[in-house]
Structure formats: structure tokens, C-alpha cells
Image 1 (cartoon, rainbow, N blue to C red):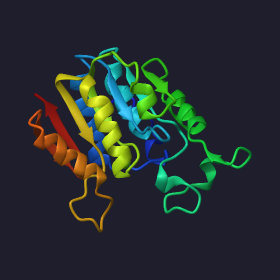
Image 2: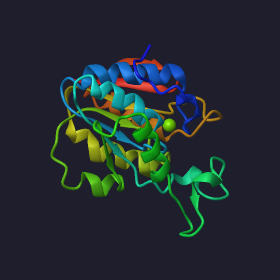
Image 3: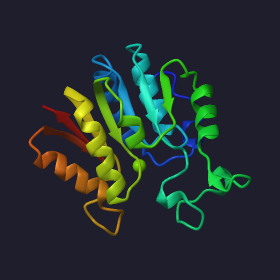
Length: 205
Ligand code: MG
């Protein structure tokens, strides 16, 4: 049971199963005692709310990184496109309005710091050590590798690397997150903690 979880959390747009959300919350609650958490790919804020509630227990912070223009699969004509999140005036996806509304309604503005930017731009001058990095951004190999390369140097020892959408069967989903997960394990810098559904959790040694 997660305290103060919004009653309508299941109505919030997003792609996070209940068991994954619970695991994410528990890892973030432990990690946030050591430092801030970074989420890559916030979309409409569903997972951000779990991370925010976890960070609140230690008065820590979740940096919620997203350009809010949608990933490849959210664009017009793609499988996961949601017309409600399309700004027809500007001709672009815009998930930031929905994100702000959801985080605000959850009462988490004090613990959630949105970073509206791409991964590389946000990382360029980053200096703050992170206690947890949750990679849930673009699913192209290029995007997933960029997220890993940009942020791994900032993950502190004893911190947690979480990667969403791990599918060993290519018919179930794209292989980029799984490739990054295996790369992290092969680096020798991480130890496997657990895998919950499609959420992989690694400990930075
Ligand atoms: Mg995901």
C-alpha cells in the first residue's frame, strides 16, 4: 500500500503496470535517502507520481526529464499516438500540460522538478550525483543508448538503475531497453537486483 496515492492513478495516461509501480516506489524510497532521483521519459506523470511520493518520504527530489514532444511511437500515425495530447495549433505532441496537471493534483509540486529538455542537452552541464536513474525514454537504440551514456556517469555507487520495457521476446516489444540492460550488466558496474514484469532493477556497485 502506497500512502497518498491518488485515487484516480489508474486513469492517468501511461504505460506502467501495478507491480512495476510498486517496485519502482520501493526502490526509489530507499534510494532517495541517499540523493535525488532522475526519471527519463515522464510522459503524463504516472511513474513520476510514484517516484515523487517515494522522494517525499525523505524530502528528496525527482528530476522529471522529458522534452514532452512524445517518443517515436507517440507521433501522429504511430501505434501509441493519443490525439488528446496533440497540439494541433503548433502541430506537435505536448504532454507537458497533462504532466503538470497530474503532478499538481497529486500534491507533489514540491518534490517533482520538471526538466523540459532532451537527454543530451540536460546532461551537458549536469553535476549532481543521482541515487537512482529510471530510463523510460525513447525506445530507439539511439535514444536508449544516449540516455545510458549521458546519465550513467552521474549515478552514485549504491544507487539504482531502473530500465523499463525489457522484453526478451522481440514480438512483445522493442529490443533497445533490453540491449541497454544487458550492456549495463556486461560492464561489471552493476549487480542484478530483480526484474518485475518488464522493469529491470540494477544496483550500481
Ligand atoms: Mg515505458
